[in-house]
Length: 258
Image 1 (spheres, rainbow, N blue to C red):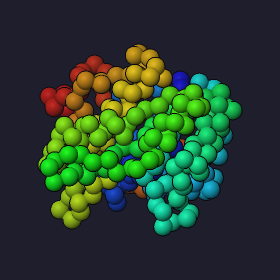
Image 2 (cartoon, rainbow, N blue to C red):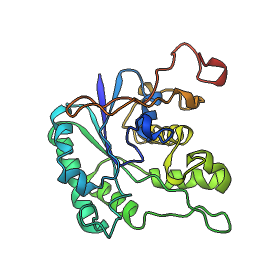
Image 3 (cartoon, rainbow, N blue to C red):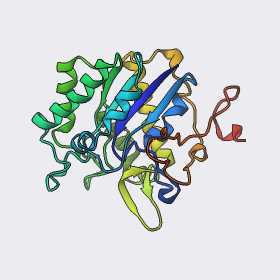
Image 4 (tube, one colour):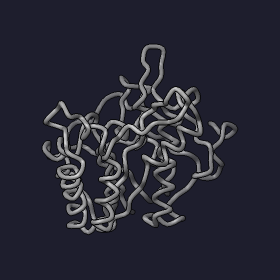
């Protein structure tokens, strides 16, 4: 059995009952992976490459990771925070330097590092064009992946294309828009599920995963399969999964809900 370790920010992180319906895409990733692949979601709200490393959050990953496991790294949203020196990184220097720390750490344990460009925010021009919001960071990650010879999942480009296809109104049903909040960065269950689908498809396209290690890429995943644990586990315990298992014997559709 292999484990997919996830290091990232709030767009991927596990959410708890007090944050529902906000959903990190890492919570939905198990829907699309074979049952012999486990997801260990170490993504944390508000972190950049710098703050994640400075807080020692890579250390427990490197303690637990084993040869053949994956370390999937998605940062960028908070590296962009120029006014916050505890998080900000410059894309072509410190950001790339930090990405190399993740890459080298995984390789030192015999694991496979994988870099994923940041999922795009929901932002549209007046004419309905979906806009890029991450500046130079996706390009800097692409360059870092090429130089380090590691697989790259271009989630920024793929999510931008998806938001463009859906348009300004339909994308509201993928983001955390509620009666009290209009959040154009974080996802609700349908949005998290679709981003996790993009991630898995990229893992397949880049040959990080074999076809037998993925599942349900063409199936509908009911939003009510997402669950939010009551509270965050105590420090040192295993990250939790935010998805309910789906029967292998039935296709995932509205008709197959229990």
